[in-house]
Length: 309
View 1 (cartoon, rainbow, N blue to C red):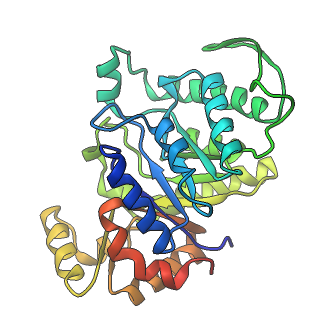
View 2: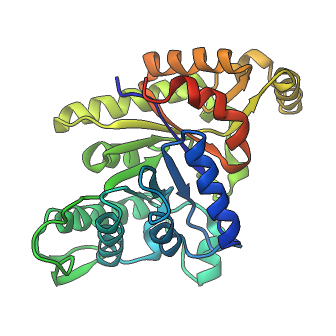
């Protein structure tokens, strides 16, 4: 099993001063990674920000979680990612997904294709990006992309190849993740196109167990291994956590026991959460956990106990 790693997902970037403070605090508390989303809402550009942040720390990694493949050409994504990895000594994680938030497509006037089409496009992009990371000159004519003699712009493969983080909730995307990903994000499906479209069934232990089984089988077929990541849905730490989560469960017509078994929901005293994470690593292989910006401080005692174990 992989050692535990912990990251914090920032909501976005609205102030350079505030994000510097957040990164400094995350590093002081022992987090391994700071990640940014990729949406066309109230935030600055994630790639430019990540390149800047990588210069603020000598130890932390930085990454996109995740970039929408439909919004950028894969050659440009590969060049940007390789550049940040080069100047940060490899401390960059390129998170890439098929796209899921309908408002991003609406803002740009783009058609949001059905999931199978978006996944096929992601597959083609990953093939191109992987070849570029291997130092190849890429010429390709496919269903979605035509590339003529593309390179990263430097001689050979990059000195420090970015880690590939591929996340998803469907079997097709998770199969791609097993083929290309260094880190595989095991997520609930967001097929409704909004964050509110997640069903309790998608958050259940059985759902995650099925996804992990599919990933493990796919990794075996490709003769690969990968780190398994879980981005939390909800984290509450402390004496009021049980009552707070119990009220939330009641509002959704669920019992506290139902919610307690959901892998991406963590609540209780730090020692109880530590036990839960150790069990979820043993049963599901999940070792790389991402919490949200507003959970940074409350989750820190858990990070202090488990980081690197």
